[in-house]
Amino acid sequence: MTSLWTCRGIGTCFVALNIDPEKVWYSNSALSVLLLPLSWLFRWIVALRRAYYRVVGQANGPSPAYVIVVGNITVGGTGKTPFLIWLARQCCKRGLTTGIITRGYKGTRTDRVVEVGVDSRVEEVGDEALLLARKTACPVVAAADRGQALVRLVQSVRPDVVLSDDGLQHYAMSRDFEIAVIDGEREFGNGRCLPAGPLREPPSRLRSCDLVVRNGPGDPHGPCFEVQPQELLALNQHGVRKSLQEFSGRKVHAVAGVGNPGRFFRMLEQAGLDVIEHAFPDHHAYARADLEFGDDAPVLMTEKDAVKCETFLDSDIWYLPIIVQANAALEQRISTLIEGIPIAKATT
Figure 1 (cartoon, one colour):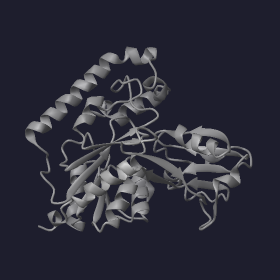
Figure 2 (cartoon, one colour; figure 1 turned 135 degrees about the vertical axis):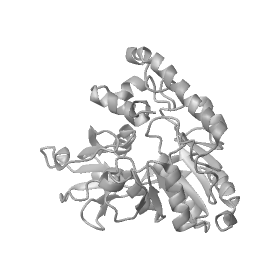
Figure 3 (cartoon, rainbow, N blue to C red; figure 1 turned 180 degrees about the horizontal axis):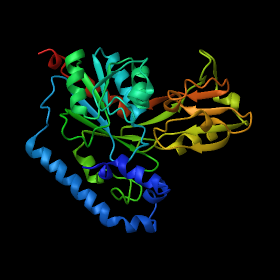
Figure 4 (cartoon, rainbow, N blue to C red; figure 1 turned 30 degrees about the horizontal axis):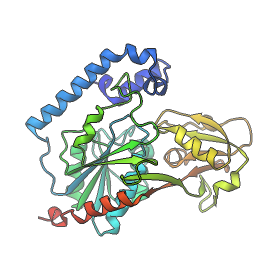
């Protein structure tokens, strides 16, 4: 498909036309209704692609490592990346050699296959790829073609398990287990496929996933998790940290270039901060001027934003690490999954 028919391409078109996709995708707006014929066409193309790979099989064939895809059926902002970081740590704690593959979106080198390290340049590998490498200490390979990334990772590391950051719709790549993460607050928006709604695939796609995980409170007996804030870290003062409560009642500039910036802003407001919101497009490449607000209020940002701002030398910029807290049902499902991964598969 051309870039117009990719999720990123559609989002870029909205931005170019100065249209807020959130207002289109999470409401029954007139524009959403107007886009319904294109939405039907998109859904038809998606169904054809899936049917094609069912017939021809995966381009790279079965992998010697156990491949778990962590993805979603909506565009961005479901909490997929923090969940994948948590899952990688669970695999490592149980003694599995774990690797990660990712798209490396907006990385200038990810048209090729790139091995990502903790010191990689964010401009070359993308913010999510660098964050995954730093937060998990696992080998990470980024490439536009996740199948190629998988082959490189297996050849260089021989992992027991490979976690794919996104890729639920990347049918050319083989996989053993699919996990879909859904946003417990926004769920499926207006329930329409792109470009009329936020869906990459219809909700019926979830029936074929091995595990559906909810980000946010829901059925206490179903697998779900919540994202919890940690202490704020100073961007350019190593080891300096403060609790969110130390900023309670203070005016702060909250900066977020993520899929769902509203979740970050609400997290700060719930901690008692007086938040001035600054939402940027997902994966935004920051310039120093983006953080100049003409006052002395501190700037708070997400950890994904921080990896792109490390050259900024201001002393009052802070970022907020988060962790996943899984409920008992999710803990049990993941424990059962990991225990069943055939470690010998990577070495036969």
